[in-house]
Length: 366
Image (cartoon, rainbow, N blue to C red):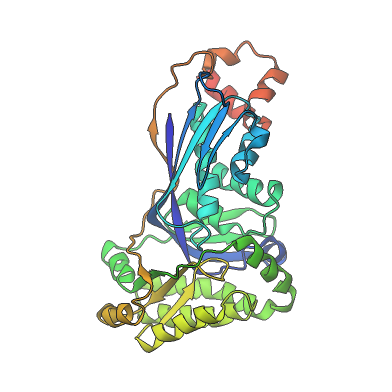
């Protein structure tokens, strides 16, 4: 059995510039951080003692005879991508609700890729996990997604991520003194609105708006550098909150679906209670709201938003990890090194995606 743990993330600045329709022409940048709430995936080869071939446990329980019958889109896509035809059991557990703006879908994709490779004895780099998760979600599932979620949930930490027009990316960690990180964290409050939504639908509307919102997106891109400077230079931290407010005002202009009326009402209440800035996380429409406020003003903010769920969090820096690994004891299903030495090339390709063959051969040679 293998258990992967992949963090959710909060995005501060640059969201929207990471859609391919924008960065392929202008490049992109985001400032984002992973937090200590996670997506857990328990995976094991399913012994051949059951009437079903595979079992997938998420919002529902699926027991299927063939993988083509799997309803969970990411699970089905990843098993097909890896050309995996053995019996598998997958259990998903998430600390926070899905479809709520914290990158949960990408955390699932990254975590399942990580677990499946680990199940086969392969170590995945953070870059590989991010790139393949982007490929799964955008190219195979045809979802309207950016690329920051896959990168951030794979890498973890507080990062400024630069995305170049050709799709290459650079992850630049912000290494702040511990006291400064605590001071920054003390100014942040996270609430759940109680509303989940399908981000891909809202993102599709945002993508259509991009050609007409170039000025707003250019400014939002520039704000990433400004916010990074505020944090790294140790200046007046309240400037970060003011910049967050300006960014949210710009983001609301990209699409009418980003901030429905009830979100505007929550934001206005928060501002009256002392919030310097804030934003709705993710594509928009609902989910989690993040506010920047002086620590001494937090009680009055919590009172003003007492109908919402306050969600404590801490920053984390590990990214996706394998937190449990127990080698399979079923020799007929285990993929040990010696098994590969006698396989023809075409047989190898039926067991593992060709992208991974070079890595597999490296493992076999050790």
